Length: 259
Image 1 (spheres, rainbow, N blue to C red):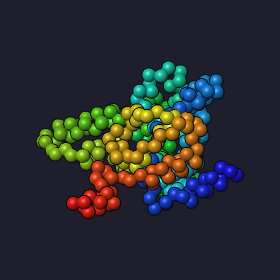
Image 2 (image 1 turned 60 degrees about the horizontal axis):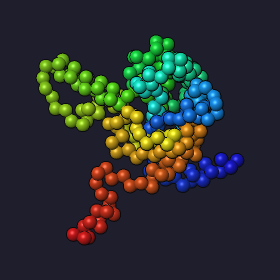
Image 3 (image 1 turned 30 degrees about the horizontal axis):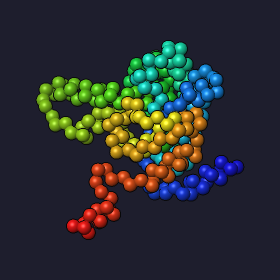
Image 4 (image 1 turned 30 degrees about the vertical axis):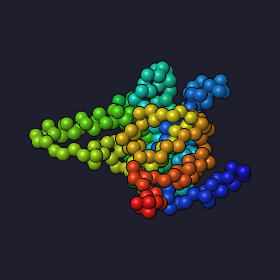
């Protein structure tokens, strides 16, 4: 009951007209969560599924249209083979169990990353989940799988070079051209980037797209991340002035008056 009251209070404080359109999350701390409880690492990853549901539900309640979760990086292949296999099995388990709920909530699933390098059975289950949620018109939930921002930029440059070779002619390349060849070309850049577990780094995640994102870091480990945490992050986001390298109206007015 207390949690519900806190959630209602926080939602009442949020300005629904100034929500971030796109929230991206670096989900970190599963291993430390398990270690604190003297459990195997996979127990932390399994507990993290609850947090995925929590943050998705919170975004739905507010009306945030895009949510992107960093689920598996290109660097994660360096982990023990047994852990990687368990992560892939857990992903397949999630997809098999959650498709019905995603459809019920009108959520469309998307994936970014080098998914062609994932295990064949994972690719099959992903393809099915994408097809079965493709007609949903609500929030777009994107999983970054086998994702790395440097890999994404490398792939974008490769596409641009291939395009030049096919056409046999040079063409202008500007920021919009690069953006149109990224995995995320069909969605807006994140307004808010959340990182759990207190680490102060972006870990090769959406490096191009987060150029002007507001970053919010919490010490909360990912399995403990709740809707309250998401609401607090949005409130903090709304307290900040987003200048994109320029000046706010107040600052510009003060500068003009001094001149």
